Each structure stands twice: as structure tokens, then as C-alpha cells.
Image (tube, rainbow, N blue to C red; front, side, top):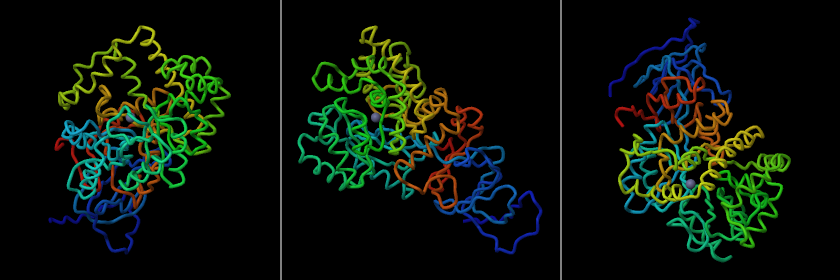
Length: 457
Ligand SMILES: [Zn+2]
């Protein structure tokens, strides 16, 4: 290995210290470094050894060190790698190759960590993740829930059914033996009682929980049981209605369905109820993953033609075929249903802003993966950030919902742009605080200390 030794001087010409000069594996010099806590950029230099940030020197500090590899970051913007906090690896054996191909796409789009929210490829993606950590494979770190927990004859392939009380400990035992990172609950057939009991037992086992929520359950009940993250906003909307109890009873009695309840929930949205719910979410540290971008795509499937989307060239025909179900449902819906869906989406955008104002922790997640039409692994996270800004968050607040709150929710403290953190970084050409779309101006991604240039991917 060729060892270059260059002494970098800070702008201030104060007398040199006597400390022996260090040699780092990788130095990114003279760049704009994102301060995650303050939400600002500060000029300085980041030094990396192996897969860890060893040191951050700001402009006015005096420093002197060598490097094996140097990136000139002058005029560029260095941030922690992005997190997509809701993706899916799924689709069975037929789609393994396609799911595998997404790993590189994430790195290409600056995403160094993804949270897999349940699928049918658990052992395989855990193997991929291990290879990624060993630098034998290019891809993001994958945190996974493993199979979803649902009721009998569940909607999604690979879900673990909970049909009686005994099944709960069996299901959680099997997730623990799989060594999953959290528990994902789904609501296609899971009973009210089992849903609440799963959360309570997971809580006792110190497992993190996240999920949809059967509409037979009131949001407060889920929060009180210990739910840690609410995926999608339907369930938040439910908890903001002054008539939640009555609507829940109608659902339990089979007099009202999930989609039919939406317009009632919107008309009975009550500001005092909403604020009390937001406060409970905040006080109990419950995160919310709004998934606005997919909501936007699905709400306008009847109007927007995606057949010329450039990303489609990265997808196999078999993968694209999985979009058909949602596409068909959108096109054959009644005019009223089509309009309701759009109104609901507009409401969710406002709801996201209200949640943020109430200081509830939000997570940027795209929900990309098989079956989720035109929500593309990689770019969709950037679209989600853009949606957050459109909803009213400042760019630095939107960024926080990706690489700030992602690790907080999963209780991982080794991430960020700080010394001692994992060297997962992204170098941008343009300032994302000026325009959130600039998160897409990726020059290179650094994953576990290794550099990936866009062209090589
Ligand atoms: Zn999902």
C-alpha cells in the first residue's frame, strides 16, 4: 500500500503542537460538516480509521496528520448516511435477485441504513447484512423485524400467525431466536386482544414494537400497551377523532369497514382530542412513520402515468408485475373513493405538520418494495424528505427524521457525524438546507469507511 504523508494545516498559523502526527485511513478535508444536533454546517476535516470516525477537526483547530486516502471536500457537504426507516425485502424466491439488486441502489442514493418492516426473506437478508458488515457485499446496514405478526390467513406471505393466546409466546420466541431487531405487527386478521397482548408481552421481553393497528383497537390502548412506533397515519387519525370510541364499536360490530371509517374520522377530527393524543405519543416516546410519499403515489395512481419512469429500467418484469394489484384497485375504484383517497392524503400532510409541531418523533420511511407501486428503493426516501418539507418541516428537521430519529427509535447510539461513530457518510455537491432536493446531489457514499462513487455503482 502506498502511504502518502501530507501535513494539512489549518487556516490559523498558531505554533505547532508537539503531538506526534497521526496517519488516518481516510481523510475528508476542508468540507462542510453537518452538525446533527445543531442542524448547521461547519467547515472542517473528518478523519476515519477502518469503519469508524476517529476525529473531527473544525476550521479553527490546529491539526497535523497524514492519510492513506484523501477526499477533497472543498465546497461540498458531508452528512451522516441517510436512513430509510421503512422498506420491504419481499416477494419470495422469484424476486430474490431483484431484492439483492436494491442493496447497491440504496448506497447509490446515499442510504447507508434501512429498516426492513417485514417480509418473507428474513434468513437471506440477515445473511446479506452480515456480508455487508464484513465488507464482502455492497449495501446498507439492514435492521429487520423478520416476519410480521398477524392473525390466521394473513395478507402477507411469511407472516407468523397468532390465532390464540398460546401463539403469542411461540411467535415472540421464534422472533427472538431469529435475532430480529424489533417486532412488526400487522392488522389484516389479528384480533384486538392478541394485538394488545403481543405488545404487552414484547414490552416485558424488552423488544421494540412497531406496527399498523387493527381498527378494533383504540390508539390509546396501543400506546398504553407499549407500542413504540406507529406505521402510517390512519391510526393516528383514528386517535384524533372525538368519536373514536363509537367508531371502534361500530368496527367491532362489523357495521363499518376500515376505508369507510376514514371520512367519518376526518369529519370528527377534534383539535383537543388530537393535542391530547399527540402529548401522549410524545410523553410515551412513541414514534410515527407518516409514509407520505407512498400515500401520494397511491392516491394519484388513477391520474398519473408512471410507465415512463426512468427507474423502471432497474426493475424486472416480475417485480413490476407485483404493482398490478394496487394499480387495478386504484383504477377501478368509484369516483367517490378516488376523491376520498386524495382528500385523505391532503389531510395526512397537515397531520404530519401537527405531529411535528407537537414534538412527536417522526421517522422518514418510504415503504418501498415489491407490491408497492412506483415507490422506488433509493429515490423514494428522498421523495419522503421532500414531502416532509412540503408539509412544513424545515430541511434540517426533515433530515433529522431520517438519520437522527432512525437510530433513536432502534436505540443504536453508534451513528451520526461524531467521533467514535460508524463511518457511514454521504458527500453532497449542494447544500440540502437551501433546498431539500439537494439530498439527491450525491457525489459519493461512504459505508463502513469504504468509498462508493456513483459511477462505480
Ligand atoms: Zn410497509
